[in-house]
Structure formats: structure tokens, C-alpha cells
Image (cartoon, rainbow, N blue to C red; front, side, top):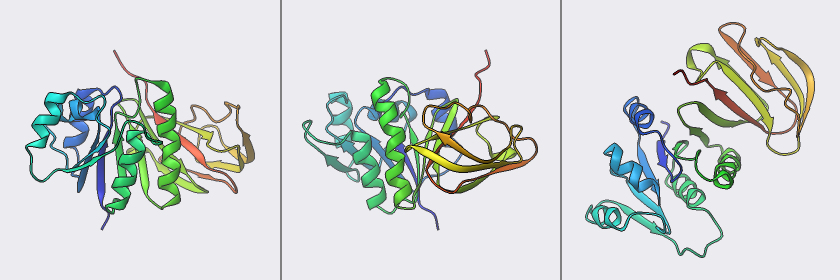
Length: 220
């Protein structure tokens, strides 16, 4: 049975969206990375594990969560080689998570946001499903093939970008803008903002790793 993990990290987080998302499903494991403690408190979430150097966490929140006996604390020095999000992902996988859904990984500092997308690669290599989510986007990685279903999409737009170099031999079936055996190079926007033509569509490719972004426009 799949072990579903919620990971809250320290980027900007829309609390209304996050609250609705957390209520929509159950999690077997909840991990909070450093600055994510503020969001966890606001959402009424008590984590199973707190990870990081705690350099951006509110000291009063640290004191409050320290009183909860079952929380596992995975504390690291500020002078470290990994971000708190990377450490939290490692902890999740070491505890058997095979599906990790990450909130708070977008917004705020762009260097952290971009690094978080690349951190998904380590999950992919270990066979772990990992998703970065916010109100507008669901971001994940694809290796060789994936089928999309209209009733399960995050939004109507589906975009593909190379994670490492080039994606060779892309074929898109069931999309408004189909492709046949196309090589997508880094620096190209050819595969941005596609849509399903019907109820489902499939991407196939021979080589590479694709960043997939399912997205939607915000309505006012």
C-alpha cells in the first residue's frame, strides 16, 4: 500500500489553498522543514517530523512544538551542504514514503524554487512519486511515458521542459498540439501550454527526463 507523505517547506504558501488540499486526502506521514512550521501552525497541522537547521523558524513555535512528545526532530547545523527541503525529502524516503506531495516549495526565493524542482530527480531515481503543488501548478517529472486524464488534471494546461539537456523522440497523442518523434532541446518553448484534445492524452519519449507542469490561470 502506498505511503503518502505531506511535506511542508518554507516558501510562500496560500493557506486557503493548502487547507483545502490537506482536507481533501489523508497522509501517512507529515514532515515540516524549518520555515514551514509557520504554515503548519496556521493550518492546524502537527507534524510527525521536523527537519532543518531552524534558522528561519519562529523560536516560539519551536518551543511550542518541542512540547509534543511524538515529534521526531532531525536538526542540522546552518553550515550544511543541503537545503532544508532536500534534507526533508531524504527523511521522507528513509521512512518509506513512496508518494511525496510538497507544499511551500514555490514562491519566495527563486533559487530555492528552482532547486526544489531539480530535487524531484532524486525521488525519481528511487522510484518515489514526488509533486510540487501550489494553487496554480502541479510539477513532477516523467521518464519515458505518462498518460493524462482530463478529470485528474490540476489545470487545463500541460507543459513539458527538459530537466537534463534534451528530451529525444517526444510523441504526443491525444493533445491539441500533437508531436511525432520530436527532439526537445533545452532553451526551447515548443512544449509549453498544450492541452488535451479529449478525455486523455499520452506522452512517449526515448531519452531524457521531462519536467511536467500542469497549470491553470487564476480567476479574479
